View 1: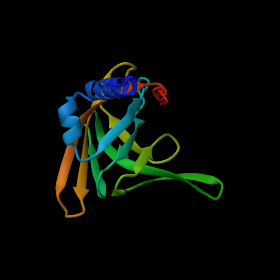
View 2 (view 1 turned 90 degrees about the vertical axis):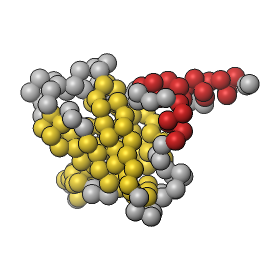
View 3 (view 1 turned 135 degrees about the horizontal axis):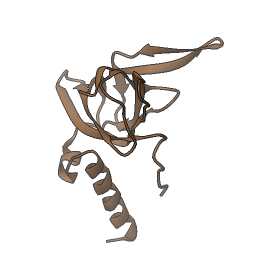
Length: 157
């Protein structure tokens, strides 16, 4: 086994552990999730964002997000409209086959509103992502996203 293979397996195992999943269940999921995190909050703050990269092996749609940690969880898009940055809900997010769709600060993201409690660094937030495939079959993916003040540092290959 090459050093690269060992590193890739170790990284996949670490990501799976962060999400509260086994490596076997990660491989069986309809969509691969990477670089996922939720931004920390301060006392009294009622909203925050969650970010991640989603890669589907076949065309799918992200049709919903839910978490017991917030009253409202929606996929949002931020776009410039002239000189004004606008944010709007995306009801269905297209996930083209084999392409990574990034949810990141300043662009597509999960908006969490009516928070039930502050989100502290080094804790996690349970999430369920809801998908629909090209045949209309629904699936879901349960995750535990780490809470951080800034995006986790990624190791480049």
